[in-house]
Image (cartoon, rainbow, N blue to C red; front, side):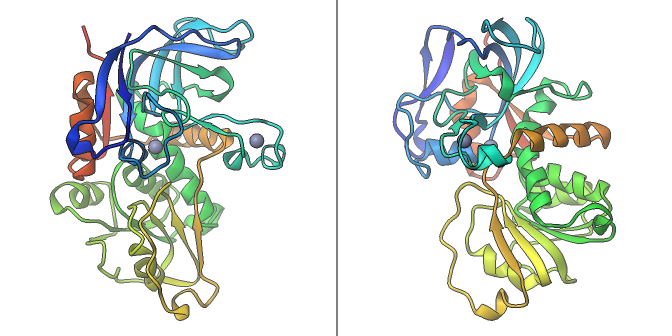
Length: 339
Ligand SMILES: [Zn+2]
Ligand SMILES: [Zn+2]
């Protein structure tokens, strides 16, 4: 099979991924072998490729928003058949035995494996993944539209949960979003469907700000602009630590600022008064399978419409450069179009 390999992290502008011919992997007894149809690109892929996350595997195939068809099954797999569509996300496998797994917090598992970081991912014609961690995807999303659900969507969903707003509190709630890429554009749709007003702070007037308006933002400004109202909660998707005090300045007492990324530049020192008043800052680490399943149901019911920009499989390096330059509208997707 053809696969994109990262031998050593390097700036995306140097095109660090190399196209190789590799044997098709063999699924172990609890795994699916998937023929990949499309694989979303994510900011986390950039952090892996450029070395902001430590190297966990040399000669790595990146990619963790994989949509494919089951081509073979391990002997102990249940619930999937040959030809079924399945999705693979970032959380690849957990131990099931540690203090976190045992209490339903598998996203914090000490032994967790991650697709496209500690195990090979989906920038390839085939991939294997544990059946128990693979998702059924809603039928009203085609393969390309479904890819951003698998990370951008699920993480956005968990970020909304960690704002601590729930049920009727969403009606009329004022939510801030900082950064408006793949995750932001799904998150705004969930929040609005729940009844919230969404205030979006992002750079790039032509792409990100325009898409935010199109998706019904109550107000759109630049990253450092102050929204016209006090916010009940905010989510920072941009990997920029300097936005933490900016976001804190804009939320009401008791409000929460959720940090949605796996990596962030250092947070500058700020005055205690910004966090006083029982304001909360918290990060989001991965997701549980329950988050994923709940999110898929909600996304199908609304229904969420994903905005994607497709890249040919051969353009993996170019796609990462485009993501790095913030020039993708919505979510970027690699399409398996080798033939
Ligand atoms: Zn565990
Ligand atoms: Zn991701």
